[in-house]
Image (tube, rainbow, N blue to C red; front, side):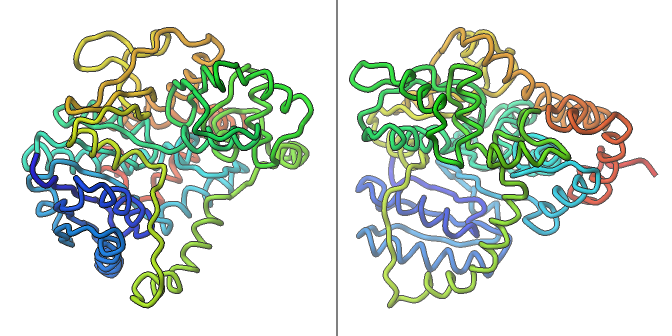
Length: 445
């Protein structure tokens, strides 16, 4: 492959784009890459373009950098597409996803993966990704689409139904981040840990967690038993006690995927497990409030620009495909690959998105067949898969009823609201989101 052509979609996410560009351009084999930056927000795009040149200078790379608000231009002939968009942004979409459920007494923490907020984000995001994917079918049919956008499982699943010709892998950082957290809890360098992880995005579990051949789970269980755990991880250590395995996603995320930790009127649970209600809006407000100062620093050539390798998989995948250097990453793919090689996780449904280790080399993404996972883990995952399946079905069929069904089966929503409340909540959210909702799913006049 000549200089790889890499399109960053949603490049106005400047900090994340900076990290990815630093990772990519630090590889000598990728230092001359053709980088296409696309966003619909011209001012943010302008900042990222300047940052891209600063990153290149910092690592001694000489890429071609093009910034454009023309999506077709960014995608044309791209070998790799990295997607990091947010449909509807913090305002109005995220604000709506928190404000309306709160009126029903339904509290959330992050609301981007599951729950009523995750359902709504999926409803407005999958169609946009599918539209982009149809552009890819025409402009770069052999590309590898790397999706960083949540709700990950719904997005990967929806694209598999709506645009199966494009190879898509969903990328997250919860597996590697959590491994580092657990290594810190145990006082062991993370590079010395051997682990095997599998499940669905944000609800994968470490099936193996070892140091020099020694099982580390007894030590983790002892931490859970004695309560000597970081306050931010109380939810996950409690689930370790109950399930026997540690989950990858953070406690603030996980607490809203199950019905056990957030209950209206149960402040004792919120305090006991340190559940940060409304955490995502707080983060957004903080980031928005600090953007102007950050922008000035990023654009100021006299300000030092730190460029260091992140834990994101995107650059590693590109480098392995370009050079043939084999690596293992964790990717989100369909449980029954198009190759017909059988299910990756045998006791999860054929048609769902799973997160498993994947070999990457010149042949691309090659998922690992895990086989059977512990029954209690598969059962818990199925409660989330039900919601994902019905949300995707609503999008594929245009049947609005399935949105109500998804909310009805959501573990947190169904534990808090009765059926009439759920139907009314869905109606209110769809109305408030307006044109962000596909026409077929909007209420009839």
